[in-house]
Length: 457
Ligand code: TRP
Image 1 (cartoon, rainbow, N blue to C red):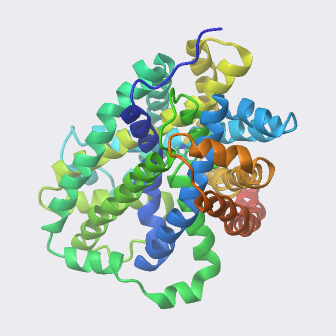
Image 2: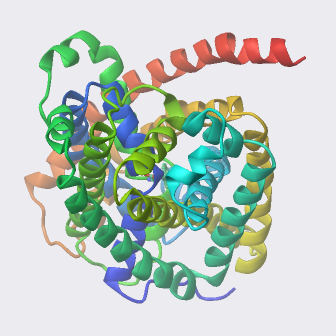
């Protein structure tokens, strides 16, 4: 067997992890869940979750990966015993499910980006009877969506097939700085918009009443978003840490990664909300997965300078989505390479191909987006995080602290604090979130999904 690959530089590892974390979760999902959660009220809870839960949890994934130098299935088996291979198996399935719909949504962004080269967003919308919603309806399913899903998956497979240093590390070194610079530029531009103030207001002044009235929905939504945006709960960070060649300070790396991810989500809000308000869209929370496409194209069609900013915006999201998609495929690919001894090329192409097929139904009808997304975010990721917490907190805490101390030095009582954070508060939040997630999903299956089946059979 070939020697296992490693990152060429520490920056490469950090950028890859940031690239994974920063994606559709920050730019497509964050604004609309924040809108639904009452703007700043949601933001506050979300930040709390990121610090108190995201940070200890990302460290848990890191130590598992660096200690075992294996994919999640192998890693969990080594630390927990043979039975844990089923849990690892669930991680792999989660990767399949998330990437399948992620690629379709990313394809929409690529489409909106490329459309911008054919003319201004105003002239584009004029071509659709019914404006932005009609355009979204036309491109989000059918042959159009299928073609862009194909292109996006092909790019993802290509990068992963090239390997850790020549593929992923090289790609993220270009992509992540580009994302950051583009977003800063757009945020500065958004600041100059006529109604920027109203946008900031909505985004940044918490209405505590909203928290008090809706906490049963806000808490799990914020926890789910915190896990999703940090790519936690299915072994991405386990896999990426398994390519670390030397023992570095994981707490520092974790802080940098979380800082970047949160900063970029926050920046996105500083772009999106002023743009909405400048275009007269004052209820940004409505509308689900199409919301950002519909509102943003309407805004880009109305505001002066909207054409250029639109191109930059859709382009940035496409890049961010690609660096996340890469991490999802890498988990699955690493598993096949480590456990089945298959070549990287064949593994990436084979697994990527199956994931691609799984995404095709989403291009047929958006009900499949809810079906896959709800199952992955609401159940699989939370379950995965719960298992990681059990392993690190209750089954192998000694190894975990010892591994974290490598590259840092003795942690003393901080190590205990970390383990106890994992053992009790994080565990509790996860159990509550999982319960609510399952209930929600059952509602979906027996409600909208059952109706859809009824209408289509
Ligand atoms: N974090 C990415 C985003 O915010 C999505 C993502 C990539 C992800 N890999 C993941 C989510 C693993 C959960 C688990 O868009």
